[in-house]
Amino acid sequence: MNSHDATIIGYLTVLAAGITLQVAAALRPDRLPSLGGVLTHVMRTRTGRVGVFVAWSWIGLHFFAR
Image (cartoon, rainbow, N blue to C red):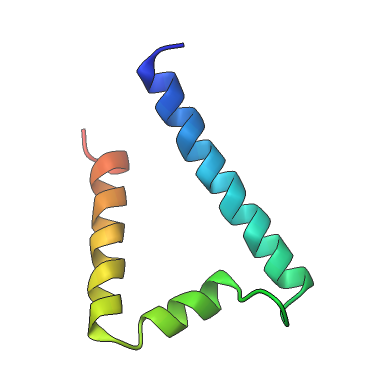
């Protein structure tokens, strides 16, 4: 396994964890907030909006730029 394969496995693991958390939030909304609820809470402040923008830009740069 080379470093590219390890990177892909790492990203797929993070994606699987996110999907698992979203499903858990849908099943038990009283115990775990959904992704939409978390983003709503984060986007209330300017720092949160900048953080979401930076994270989105980083993801776009690494996945869509060649």
